[in-house]
Image (tube, rainbow, N blue to C red; front, side):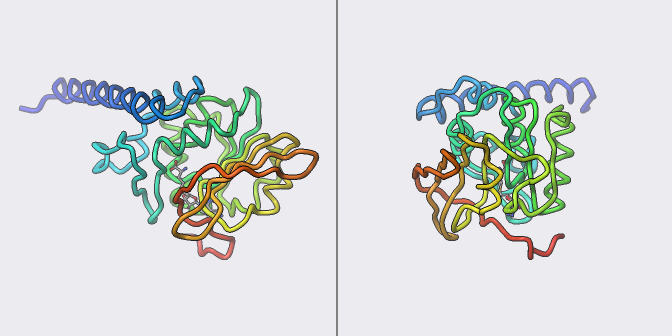
Length: 229
Ligand code: SAH
């Protein structure tokens, strides 16, 4: 008979095996590459990535790859998420904007490091689901989620010291440049639908200095005309 006791025991062992998988992920996918930021590594070892995925993908939650979420969107590969957060080189107290909440996974990682994270998602259902999960996992107080077209930024909460855009576009949207603080950094995939270049731009004397980081693949950044579901 499947008793509650057995169920709970099973749950504990599942959770501890997820923890082991996360630690393994941190070692083999992050430290073995070039993720050195202790806060990023700590957050990656802590945030349960599987919780942001449909249950049938839990067994693959800590694999070295992006995975599908709802609405034909994707949760990025763990390394890319860690890399983008590290590349922002954010300090405690910095104001952070994320464009493209998606599942909320990256939002949770940012909220592990920061007291307040502003995030914008254009797809209503994804936004509600992400917020529910973030609340459930205890990140609710640290996250302010706005359902809107993030290519116009989040004017009311600007300026930001760091902006992470998790969807691809041909150029850096002007409002995001405006809403970036002096010395602030934006990380954004630039390019067409097939492949993009991950770009980091730093605002110096009001102008952007751009660095190309590496090739990547993100879903497209959609603009306001998008029919909300
Ligand atoms: N970082 C996310 C993955 C994001 S996938 C995670 O950890 O799960 C990209 C997300 O950007 C999708 O959810 C998509 O709906 C959203 N998106 C696309 N265009 C957008 C826009 N203009 N404003 C806000 N969100 C947008």
